[in-house]
Image (cartoon, rainbow, N blue to C red):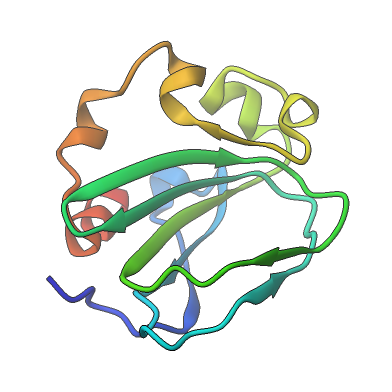
Length: 132
């Protein structure tokens, strides 16, 4: 299923219930096959990232970055993420932001197993709806 948003990066306001913890939601639809690598600059935030390729969903906590990263192309993979507010990582993920610095950690490792809701997110339309 094609995501309900373009392949370009876009930010979205979080629903009111998430605003104390989430600065914004962001999406990036599936890149075309000829897409190149892109640069991600450090922003001082922790993100909870869901990446979908077909029916596969990967949930990762992306820690604060100390340097820019070159992200290789990932054609066919679409993303939806929650950029956490300062201090929210410990409350939502069970670890401090400093413990995640420069790391990408599967959510299942932080939560001691896959959360049942993550298994149900099969496309980004459902993912975005679940976050709203």
